[in-house]
Length: 182
Image (cartoon, rainbow, N blue to C red; front, side):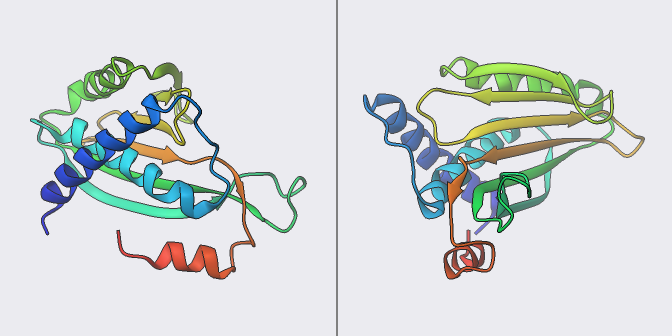
């Protein structure tokens, strides 16, 4: 299946998921990694669909995985993990001058749906980071735009689920979730 078809199908599913979460009056916090995987991935796919619609960006890579979400001091066994879904889009040099505008439009589209925007600078001062959060949402979105370095610019979409207790990175739960096809 072509990526654009998968993103379109996923975007419809994500829109339904976002609407259902927004409409539930008593959202229940997820208690397991498996409960956070799908909403986190769907939200990333929705963001990718909104970014890619009508532009010439291309998907360079995407990843889905769990990651430790507490410090080693607070969680020495690494039992607390969150689901992460990322997508790196490349912007050709001839369009790269507007990379901040692309991210701004993407963030605005989520703000129009009730998401709250917080902007900051990344590790490199040229990187712009837009973090989106919404009461009742399982995941948080983060968009990082990197200006043109001569070969085009990039936009990283990151969707992160909440920190939940697991049996650890080597557990069957984590291995099974990370090995499932998208």
